[in-house]
Image (cartoon, rainbow, N blue to C red; front, side):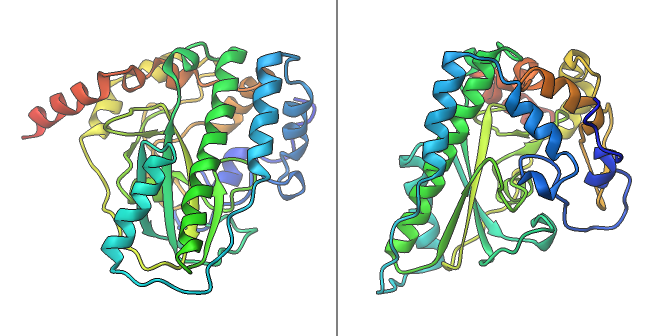
Length: 306
């Protein structure tokens, strides 16, 4: 806590602000961009000397260094609906369990960055629940790192395929210096709804998704949000709220940069998260994380609202 800056992370995130604005860098960005840079370095320096964690991190770092494939000089033409279908096919074949497409909004772009293209593709890869439920132990942290590596592979595959068709694409993956928020476009493009724990909940995979993203100028058909009654479920469910050691999960939605949404108290969450090289308890205890459960819950919610 001696490294904590003279600013609240909740203020940086815009908690309580009623005007829509782009987000500011706060974590997992170049340390110089955020007042929490020293705490990010603490996180890295105090990681457990664990073989699994070390090996997984090395593999994921190697994936992050990979580049997208060359761009064809001949631009192929298809209908936006056809391009979107093909992109989703490429993403699923590369390891994604969900792929969504939407128009990028300026309030999703972190204010230290510029984005070259307006269409954003968001993908989700699924974590292994048996590894996730060990949170906050090393096995869970290694699983998170591993799946972010897979998310990078998927966005690289899609972006490289787009460039082979003669269009532009930039792959961001899902961790470290991603210049856009990934949850908002994932919500907008139908990958799920926002849970009380601040993470996406997908109707098929539940809370175990890790996200990745890319942007392109390829003309695409946009998806629509997917609403299946999660707000009421989360309002009445207290699993993550009760299990959170630092009590960082709000029981009701909060106003954040002009949007009312579920929000996790950054100032309470980060110290616990940092000292344990990650957490994820909220996801591990979420009913939607258990294999086979999301589909049954969606059916129950559908009956309730029909």
